[in-house]
Length: 279
Image (cartoon, rainbow, N blue to C red; front, side, top):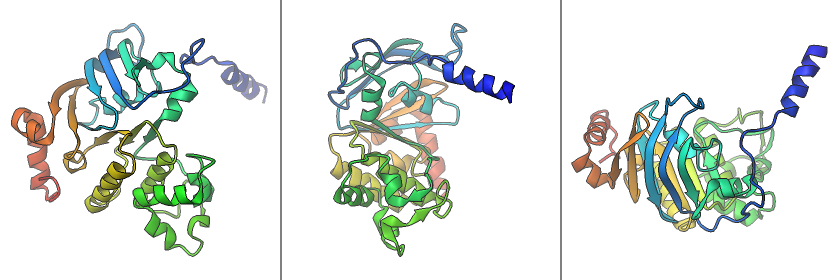
């Protein structure tokens, strides 16, 4: 018991490496994102960069897709925006300011991240959704669920929004969990919405309805979509192709088909596998 208490105290006394600066900026002006010569390594000082020489600019309201193989550091890249990690060198800007200038609360309240596997808590569907915005009205909750294509299955339950979920949402399918988490993120009304392979468990038709709804519901929100399926990002304003921590292609779907060999090969392989929505 003494050893356990000692370890708990060590954890509680630990000071995080990432903290808010003195006199922080408390408002993110818009959803613009810019990377300037960014490199990142998980181990300080060893020079083993998992991201190298990353530079790009995203305007507010744009939809950007990120495609790349497993281990290409797609998730690492977007994790630098809400400061889950700090860049080893270079600058990451959001709303025109370096992310290090913001208070962590202000920055992370302006950036919503939906992962492939998200956490749902014991309680009702409504209580889980209110984690996104504790002050959301019933109308706002319903609108977010419609945008995430979750309203129909919620209303099919006898208790509707008062349906009790088991720990981790065990009484929901994978696709239903993902759609609830997207709705919860939308309730934050974020300046930047990051979808990290968060529609992998839904079919392509449902995914397209979600993309169309997001475009209409939050036109001023910057949307960054990480995906394995090209059909998930082909309508994006710009698509980044990542390989080994570097951007090796940048452009629209049509431009990359003409100029990027890896993107073209992925597209062709997915067509061969029968993904009718890829074309």
